[in-house]
Amino acid sequence: EAQVTQNPRYLITVTGKKLTVTCSQNMNHEYMSWYRQDPGLGLRQIYYSMNVEVTDKGDVPEGYKVSRKEKRNFPLILESPSPNQTSLYFCASSSARGRVYGYTFGSGTRLTVV
Amino acid sequence: AQTVTQSQPEMSVQEAETVTLSCTYDTSESDYYLFWYKQPPSRQMILVIRQEAYKQQNATENRFSVNFQKAAKSFSLKISDSQLGDAAMYFCAYLMNRDDKIIFGKGTRLHILP
Image (cartoon, rainbow over all chains, first blue to last red; front, side):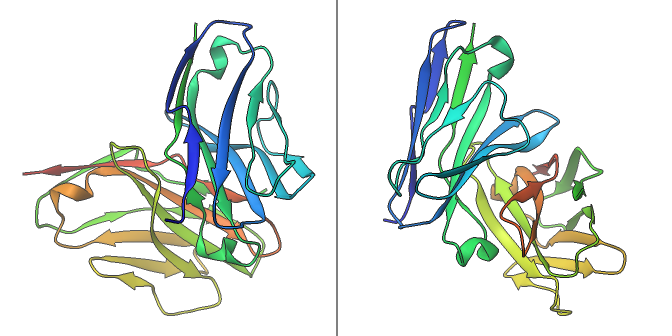
């Protein structure tokens, strides 16, 4: 089944403790992206990647890192999480040509930083 | 900068009735795509419908249809014969063809009243 897999689905952590949210897609998509969703703000893009070893900042990149060493994986790294990063996170992917047909989204990761 | 505005944070509709969700966007581009995504309580992001800006004909998908007014930069979603399973957050989204980032509105939460 074609899908984007995010892990974990839920995560509670403490301020300052480094964490990684994994994202993997099995559709050979070139394009991958991370969004955060906050009430009243919709989805805002954190980082995106057009292909392996190519990443770029979105609208709210502060406090986050990403890497794209393999085409299928695009992990989101929080080096020193803070409470304002408590949010619902989504990974999404599309083919280079297929983005005009919309993204495929993962199931989301609910992150709480205390 | 491109923006997407959903002016109705919440709406309610009686089961089996018709409801229209509003979306306006701001762009100077002529080549772009518009989307409606549904996010049910499971929080999965599901593509409902899409529209190419160069097509005058309004897109339809079963009970879902859009009213695309390019000059007015309006892209409303009509849901006919509303069902309990339509209860969700709905996001309007915009993609410029020469860009790689989908921009989302802040969402409209739709309640279906039995």
